[in-house]
Amino acid sequence: MHAALRGIALGTITLSLALSTAACGSADQADGKDSDKSKKGPLTIGLLLPENQTARYERFDKPLMVKKIKELAGKDTKVLYANAKQDANLQQQQVETMITKKVDALIVDAVDAKSISSSVKKADDSDIPVVAYDRLAEGPIKAYTSVDNPRVGRIQAQSLLDELGDKADKGKIVMMNGSVTDPNAKMYKDGAHSVLDGKVKIGKEYDTKEWKPENANENMKGAISSLGKKNIVGVYSANDGMAGGIITALKRAGYDKDKLPPVTGQDAELNAVQRILAGSQFMSVYKPYVPETSAAAEFAVALARGESLDKIASSKTDSQSEKGVPTKIVTPLPLTKDDIKKYVGKSGFFTAKEICTADFKKACTEAGIK
Image (cartoon, rainbow, N blue to C red; front, side, top):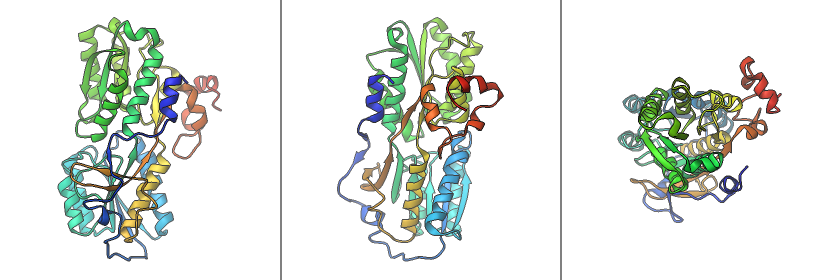
């Protein structure tokens, strides 16, 4: 791995979120100190995830969280699950349902971090503590866990620069950022710009509506038409789903499938892992799902039982509406072809059987995956 990328991958986590060393605002309530809950028996925990186009949510996030919640609270604990399918209004209705069902705590990965705030307030008014998962939702959340999102953008950008080498000043890149409704998207973008600005020309940049691959595909078609395919030397894609749409657009524009400009990604989705092995996608970012889902489960169970979060949280975060929210941040890691082998079969990643289907057996053999 290039030295600059190694520095990002192994350096000390630097949060661009405002972190507070002292509890303030609602933090005393958030860490459970002011709660009068003392429920020790089976719990009912609500889990709301944002969409199902990104395979990670159904494949990893949900089952890992359910497993951890039951380990912590007992096999009789119920986990009520719903997926919003990228519909913010539907997710608000799902929160209402969880309130009606009187869950003991609620984990929410918000479709729209701002519009969910009124629903979070309703849950809080009903004495249901809300854990913001992966995205920092607005409203009176009691805990928050995610990955170091600016670091994700820096990893992607540094990987792209390293791969471009001397080509970085011989053309332009296209930046395909995520949805403006997702606060993480801005952090990825800001992290990427901190590395790319001044080192490569950005020919076109898009904020992709709803993170949808088809929207990224259309944006990429527009970029190719505007810039000319010979002038595009690389593509910064904020996640793997969009990378798939981008790569389809590149191939249809006549790029040689063996000479595509490098395309980044995030989430280490199965299709992306296979594309990386085959050479059509350059890299992704692997976000260890086990520690992130475990933290969410631990926060939810502790809040449901009125217990302190001090041993779970490693820092505190300020959102636009809350101060001193107990937080656990997980370190993301770069995933290139050379990295895949070391993760195969581990919890939160895919097995060799899943990856090495008939179309990818040769690529797996070449990468030392059996």
